[in-house]
Length: 498
Image (tube, rainbow, N blue to C red):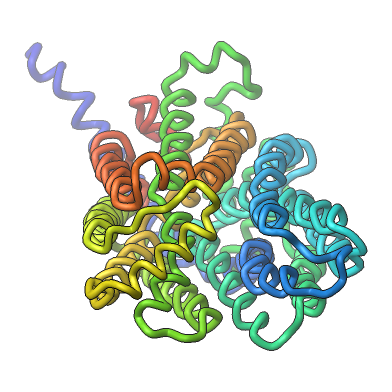
């Protein structure tokens, strides 16, 4: 009898879980996704703008280095800051985004971040000196930081669990499409007209978001149940009973604390997702993706690609293809599988990359990253081992594909899924701040690492960090495929959704 009493609650819970799952499947079978896809497209014009910001410097810097006007001509150091100052603005944007997303909502935050995008590119277009360049880049970086926080939240709070992974992965997909768009546009336009073209996506986002709704979860947090139900009817179609989903979200929200306090850091539902989100952002940047991009031009030249402009387009196209593949299979394969596969591929490819540099005796000097690459290129041309360029091209291709299919899009997706409502803005802000701060650190210390550890040692270090990504994913990252946001958050607390 005691054994029966002990087991009975478990049986009841299992039956309740199966009943809830069946009810949920019946609801989702009635859902129409057309309006959801439309809202997602309007939102991901933000990451497309963000991609143009990141890609802008690659075609613009060589032209600004050669320009005859001394007020605008960039030195090597100035060009370095022109490229990297975006990350400072983005880190600040992450903090700003975490504050405004809780104050004015997801929709208005997206509309707000279009303004510094447009003003930033306008400042670059009208630039009369270096400081106008820097101000323009900081403004576009600020907008990129806000965008990288708000858009994943907006999509995750709008989408249901069957398509959330695919739609969430579209954030990174649009970023790499934007980068490729900037590279291709830069083949035909000068730096001013490229800035004009780059201002088009944020303008379209500002206009299109005027017709898109606020997220139902934010509306419920504000006590606006009727508006939340209207939004769910808009997103799910007329056949799906929006009241049922609204009631589930509202029930989970009522079981939460309504505001964040420092004491909440003792709650596993807060500190666990916060630790996982911050670590994933840190490990994403420490894969060495920026280091690989630094070497792309030299590697393609050794493989007899005479046009470095075309080579950069090829790199960007590779990212687009494999990020698209990740988006298509995210909700089928799951987040953990793709993260582990991605980590293994990057670990192996960077180890091979290190072998390539060891065999070619690539030794940078203390002058600058550019001169180091130039000296290395000359050294390679004088050696028979230059025939190993195919090894570098192959390992770089595998690395980029590996990054794009897992550690590129997935950390942003997981960040948008794991935080409870009351800390979603703060947690996402800390994640974005960590990501962009680490991006700046890697970018600025890469040259020193090359000197201290050698080229081979630097890439072997990155390979070891990619191995740690695999271990971290296997033991700490939860699988969120097929779960509602409320179920994911209940999992961190060790409870079940009723």
